[in-house]
Amino acid sequence: MTPLIGLLLLLEAVAGTAVALSRKPRRQVLAMSVNGQVLALLFMALQAPDVAFSEIVVGAAVLPLMFLVMLASCRMDRASSGQDET
Amino acid sequence: MSATGRLGLFAFACLLLIPIVWQLVLAMPPFGAHPLPYADLINAAAPAERHVTNMVSAVNFDYRGIDTLGEETMLVCAVTGATVLLRGQRGEQLEAHPGQVENRPIPHRSEAMLLVGRLAAPLTVLFGAYVALHGMTTPGGGFQGGVIIASGLLLLFLAEDYRGWRRLMRSWLFDGLEGLGVALYALGGLAALPLGLPFLTNILPYGQPRNVFSGGLMIIENLAVALAVCGGFVVLLIEFLEETRVMSDGEQE
Image (cartoon, chains in turn orange, green):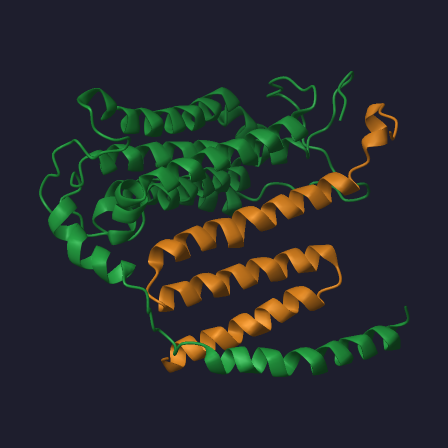
C-alpha cells in the first residue's frame, strides 16, 4: 500500500464520517457528494479508472442532484397551485 | 431512549463487536492480494482470443455477456419504475415554469454560468463518446461513456435553466434510446442462434488488436449499453427535475 492510497483511505473515512454526522439534509447531500469524489480519487489511485468514471458521475453528481431535487420538491409550496394536501 | 442511553448501548455493542471484527481484520488476505485465478486467466487469454486490450470490457460484453444483459434490463426496470411513480398524470409540458421554495426567489442566471455550461457540456458529451467508443482498448466503455454523456447534458441545465433545458431534452428521444439500447443488446446476442451457436456467441470478425473496431460483437454490445445507459439516466434526470416545476391546473401529484 503506497502512502497515497493510505492517505486517500483516511480521507474516505473522514468524508464518510462527515456524511453520517451532518444533521441538516442539504449539508448531508453535499457531504455525500464530497464522499463520492474522494471515493473516485481512491479508485483512480487503485488503478481502476473505469470505476472512477462511474463513481464521479453517479456518486458525486447525479445521486446528490436527485436528493437536492427531492428536498426542493418537498419544500415547494404545492398548495398555491390549487392542490390540496392529500 | 435518552442520548446517554443510546451512547451506552453503542459502547456496549462496540465492546462485543470489536474483538470479532479485529479477528476478521487479522484473517484478511494482505492488501492487493487476489487469490482467485479468474483475473489472471482472463488477462492471459483475452488478448489472443478476442483481440482486445481492455479486459473489463472482454468480461462484461463477451465472457460474461449474459450478466450484462441482466444488469441492463435491471437498469431499465428501475428507470421505468421511477418514471411510473413520478410522472403522475403530466403530459409533455415543455413550457412549464420552474417552481420555487417559498421566500426564496430564483436567482438570476449568471453569464459566467451560461458560458461555462455551454462550453463544458459539448466537451463533456464528446469525452463521453470517446470513452464509450474506446471501450475495447482503454479503460471505460458503454456504461461509463453513457453516464458521462448524461452528465454533460445535465451541465446544460446549469447553463439554460429549467425551461430551456426541458425544451432541449425531449423525453421521446431518450425513452427511445434506452429501449433501443436494450433491444440492440438482446438482438446482438440472438444473432448467433440461426447459425446453431449459443446465445451471445461472438460471431463477428475480431479485427486488429489496439484498434477501436476490435472485439467483434463486443463493439455492438458496447454501443447498446452506451445508448441504454445514456437514455436511462437522462430519462431519470428529466423525471426528477420535472418535480421542481410549477403544477398546472388539473394536474395531480
